[in-house]
Amino acid sequence: MKKTLRIAIQKSGRLSEQSVKLINECGIHFNNGKSRLKAVSYNFPAEFLFLRDDDIPGYVEDGVADLGIVGENEMVEKAKDVLLIKRLGFSKCRLSLAIPRDKAYTEPSYFQAKNIATSYPRILHQFLKEKQISAHIHEISGSVEIAPSIGLADAVCDIVSSGSTLLSNGLKEVETIFRSEAVLLGNHQASEEKKDLIDQLVFRINSVQAGKGNKYILLNAPKDATEAIVNLLPGMRSPTIVPLAMSGWNSIHSVVQEDQFWEVIEKLREAGAEGILVVPIEKMIL
Ligand code: ATP
Ligand code: MG
Image 1 (cartoon, rainbow, N blue to C red):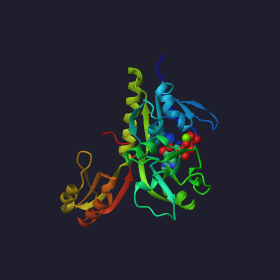
Image 2 (image 1 turned 90 degrees about the vertical axis):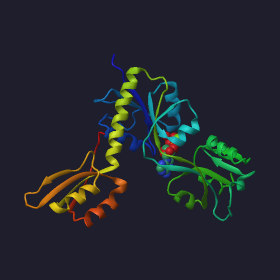
Image 3 (image 1 turned 30 degrees about the horizontal axis):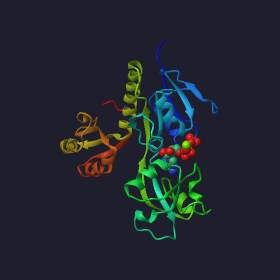
Image 4 (image 1 turned 180 degrees about the vertical axis):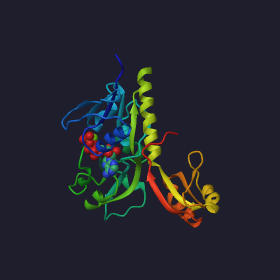
């Protein structure tokens, strides 16, 4: 029987939508009824388990799932023996310590002998140990941010992205102790056949990610500006030059990295480029 990869993803929560989107962008599709716990892909040898994110590292360690997608925070907190195969670039957030807004804060020793509420006792413990602080860790599984206002704790250690939840609970962020994004986890003992499928999936993820980090650009330039413009454009190997129907002009095509994009565009305009088109790249095979 042909091997099938089992991939665990979050059933419903902040990782779910983006996890499914990434899998779909890799050309892997499945039908998923809302309440289903399992779905089988009809065009790739993979099946999907929809679970709470807390359970995913354990399922991957035990080999019930071959792969899983979780936040790196969850992976580290659960401390299971799993392989971090790839950082996925979405659900970026940080784990931070926060205290009531009206308290003065200068340094971590503030937390000495304080009561800190968190869902991440292990990561918090590690931070406190490094700073040689002894504090009481009060583990709670949800709604951590209300703990100080109901007298349950002096401070919280919780996930932050914009900080607005903290703010609306009268808290301020004072230390970031961990930075996280979604990661692809794997089991250490994958068979050769499964490793082969995992490599295929990772290859597709890399192509999707490379595409997202780059733009395809097309522009028109007078022939005498072509050389200067080509020198500004790296391209995958080198830019493409196609003559326009109008004599004396070329169309130049190339790939530009997203993070260098605005800087390059300015320089291209200065060098005489006109009619610049910028097109997203769906996948890029390097
Ligand atoms: P579950 O019901 O599956 O246990 P959960 O409530 O534990 O879900 P979510 O709130 O859905 O978890 O968050 C899942 C992961 O998404 C977190 O572990 C973290 O990595 C990331 N995350 C959490 N909050 C944010 C945020 N505000 N912005 C970006 N990413 C976040
Ligand atoms: Mg959870």
